[in-house]
Image (cartoon, rainbow, N blue to C red; front, side, top):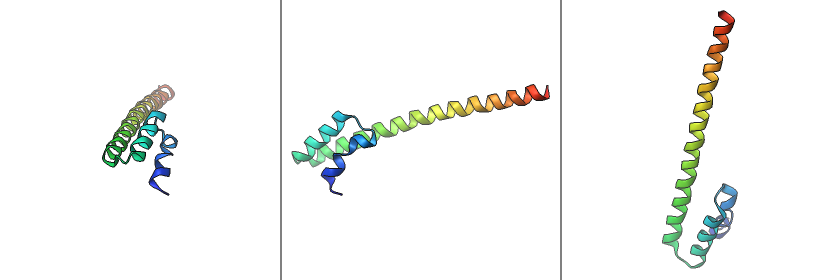
Length: 77
């Protein structure tokens, strides 16, 4: 797959439409250095989203553990 095609599919990866449009413009203008910076920023944003999701999963896990512990206490007590 060509780089241009890959850039055109950034929104399928969860990127904002404006980020994809900026990347497409930078590519079409031949501003490859700025394109790489733009892509790295997009990656950083996605990693931040991943970390936020992980924190949510961690909190759900905590709630599950507490509920399981309380369930055992209620059965045993």
